[in-house]
Image 1 (cartoon, rainbow, N blue to C red):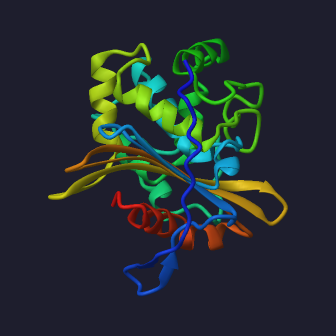
Image 2 (cartoon, helix red, strand yellow):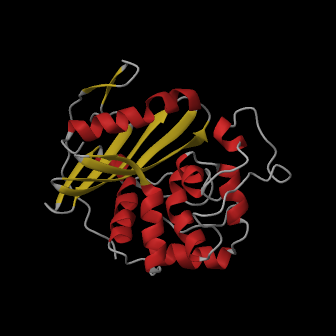
Length: 262
C-alpha cells in the first residue's frame, strides 16, 4: 500500500559547521537536491523540492538496507562471522577504500563502509526469483532487477524515489516486511550509526554515476529523539565522486538541522 505523498514544501538554507570547519548549507528550494522527512508521532511531512523527491534514481549503496535484510533472512550472512573480499572474483581497484582490503570484516563494517565486492559476492548466492519475491514483499522502488545479479542496483534497472525510501523505512520499523523477528533485531544494530544522549541516528549512504559528470548521492535513515521517530531520505547531484563524498552527508545533516530534526 502506498502512503499519501505530501504537498508541503519548505525552503531556506542553514550554514552547518562540519568538523573540518567548512560551512555547508542545507538543501534549498530549486537546488539539485531533495529531502523528505516524515515524523511518525506528529504525522508531519516536510519536503524540499517535491518534484525531485518523486523522481526515481538508482539506489546505489542504500540498496544495502533491503539487501542486508534479505541476506540475513536467508542465513547467508551473520554478525559473528568475519569476511574478506574474494579478490579472485572482484579484483582490487586503486579507488578501493582501505577498509575493503581488511582480512577480517564484520557485517556492521561491511554495511557502514559500503564494501561493495562483499555484497556483490553475497548477492550472487541468491536467485533472482527470490530477490524479486522479497522486493515485492517490501514494495521497494520499481522492483526491477533485470540488470546484472551483482549490480542491478548500480545505475541499472532498480530505481527508487526519496518518497519510496521513506515509505520503505516506515514499513521496516512497522515490521510489515514479512521477515523474522531475529532479522529485524539484528538489522537494527547494524543500521545504527550514531548514538548520543539526545538522539540515535540510523543511516546509509549511497553514491554513484548516473550520467557523464553526474553523480547521485543518497543519505537515508531515521532519527529517534525526544519528539519521536523521524524517517528521512536525501539525495543530491554532484559532478564527481570526490565532490559528492566531501559534501553529501554534511549537506544532509545540515538540512535535517535546518528543519528541526537533528
